[in-house]
Length: 85
Image (cartoon, rainbow, N blue to C red):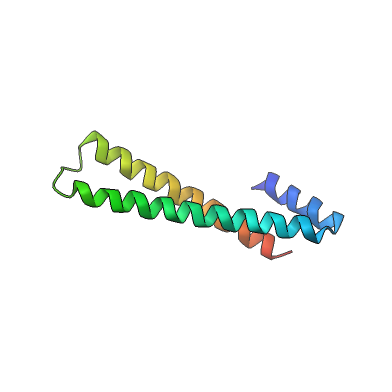
């Protein structure tokens, strides 16, 4: 996050509104993609409703969902920092 804050500071110092807008678009796109991926994985879990939770495939899907949720929080934090500019 510190590295990203440095990048934002450089964008702010350059006073380049186009680059800031481009970065904002990129992050919003990543938030949308990650949210869609989480929804898809959770939907896929519906097909395994009669499979025990200790099944390796189900555990892998839960692991992927948690990983994507962490990524989503990171993207949201970056977007929040960007909006503070």
